[in-house]
Image 1 (cartoon, one colour):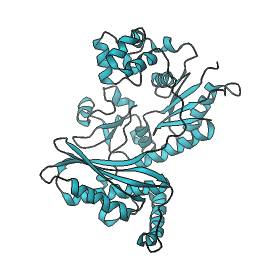
Image 2 (cartoon, helix red, strand yellow):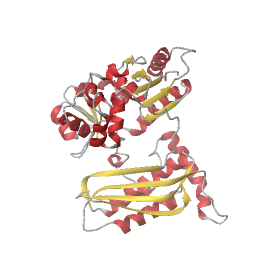
Image 3 (cartoon, helix red, strand yellow):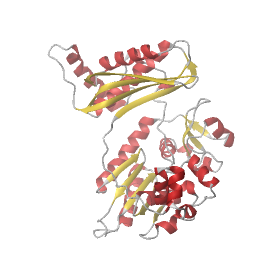
Image 4 (cartoon, one colour):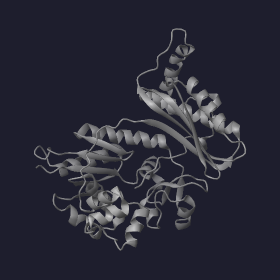
Length: 395
């Protein structure tokens, strides 16, 4: 049976790297991208800050205590998306099967291509091409499966490349701390250490039944991953089931006017995303999290649409029915689900038909000048409120 050839590619410190391309004064400096408030978290950090113990998803307060000289940037998700799209185009044009795992992470299935060209050399050439055309550095790992390739990538970051040859997976993983296995988070790693298991080699030798009793079905996966076994395929396409956006307030609020404006803006952004993807939504959900962290949601079903003038009133109505006026609000969010491919059906006398050219013109302006080049007056927000929730990234 032919060995698989799976390449894992990951852009190094992606958000920070983009910021440095836009401002070379940040080169060599400790940089953190994330929320600027006391409640903010680190979305990404440069390797200079990591020497102080700063990590992604760490509270910003703690990060600045560890590295007080760090330069903190709120970040620009629009710019990150543009660079990600550019890299994605380069990868998709070269590799036969590509899975985009996150905004800056890819799996390539090169099985069967070795006889045409060396897979390791192919990945090397692609990495160099990405750096030449975008300015971004990328690391990669090559092995027979996703898990080992991802561990190999992290092993040589930044700006590195590594191949684990078939049959060497177990030996490669054995000396590493258990937390290096992608599916093992901080809680599971601590549980394993409490059991006297600190390295992958020890985990690989544990009785499978014991791990299954302790961790349930996840215990089987833990044993397989520790032994270098991962049969998951590289999936080139996965249908998106929903679109959502949310915002956490820097201070808990009962300012209903502000909340309505933000809900309108979030809905407008999502409706634009729907139209760009050629989709409509027939289910709208609003989420409210109060200052005591109680979280409530309410949803409605409506005829499939991607029109602002139909979605915004639905969202605001859901909020009014959901909101408890006695409590301060910490977070609000909007989600569109039951996505359908295609355009909504408009009746002959539907007033929405007159708005189709308007939406088309607005979308063209956004495509050319950015998401916030044209906005409804009712949804205007301060710059700090725009898309201020960066996507989670673990680097």
